Image (cartoon, rainbow, N blue to C red; front, side, top):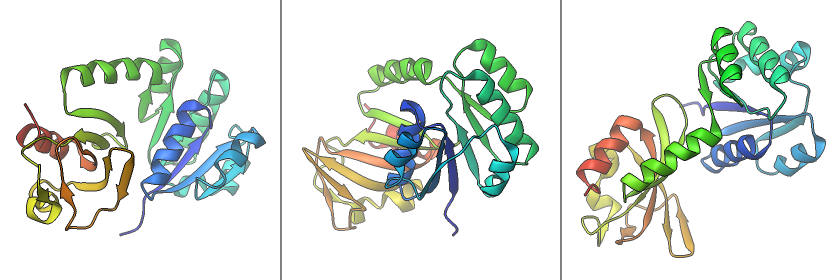
Length: 221
């Protein structure tokens, strides 16, 4: 199956974090920023990193931006550039556009011009922390789309001493354990023979409803 292709426009703290996480999960990522220093920082992380002005329609066309599955507009405080970039992406027919909003006014405009998904990183972080306080097992998550996420889940006694093969999580829940954090180590793409222990942090990728089912049935309180 063809890998999903993402483009991240704006490599500040939020955009950089999205770029790094998607790249670590093996996704194809094009990183774009007007700041050459930031682009150089992500040149070895993203599949491709370019210095470009996203408010220039011809520049975006030359990058083949309309061929990307998902474009994330993470431009910082320049609301005008964020809105104009989103507008151009819509006109070029980009399939899915996620935009970082800096305030409610910004969000209203983005909704009017057709952004598919709008995020408020600071506000969302507050909601995420609150949700993590409620659940002892889910440590963190990154929303990949409306229905898919990457989640960190703490393994409990029910999983202790069982191998991935025995648990057969992929077949039962349709999710994949892409890495296991154990103390100071991280096991990337663990083998089926890998045994899970209480306290291991499982990095899981899959559909939200499948992850929720796994969390409630297997590691829930």
